[in-house]
Length: 83
Image (cartoon, rainbow, N blue to C red; front, side, top):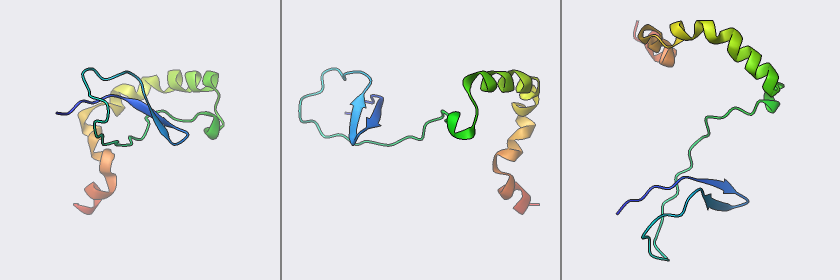
């Protein structure tokens, strides 16, 4: 039986975002830590308003960035080595 539930690691404990259904007390678990997709704006010297402006300014490029042809840059070093 596999049941997945999201959670957050804080102060040495895993806090679940929801309670799993029909899981007996004492059931063994495996915890996998997943890197967050969120960027700490403050550590980059950017506040939320600056980030909003930056996102708006770069939106014009999104169609090019998301095109299949740009996938080669996802692993540029490997692609370059195969030339």
